[in-house]
Length: 172
Image (cartoon, rainbow, N blue to C red):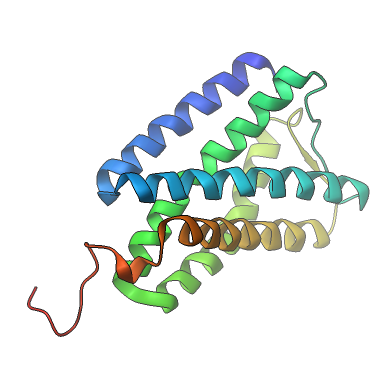
């Protein structure tokens, strides 16, 4: 990816984060938790890219300079943060079952998304043939959503503790 592409990606996902903050009515503590989850997952994602390349599952050329690498990491981290605000709202409304559905959904929709991006921009990523890269990509998405949500929960507290959480014994 070029520097311009990384900047455009980071800006687009920043807009998505602002929209997610607005529509989920997240508190500042929850936003900080989502950003912390994105930061943790950014490192995990970079490790997953390196592991997938080592195992021959995919090829993702990482930036060669420290500045571009930092921009790549920032883009990765900021792109995941809105997901955790959405999973938080789902967990508030539907509990653990809803969160599990979100995690499974990410594992199902993630690989087709990545394969579409790889088809459109082959200089960004290339997958090896076979089903192993599909399952590895799906597992990576599952880990990204689960780990990021867990970090957000550690920082901002459980979803049921929020002021927006509905309690069955209270009137709506």
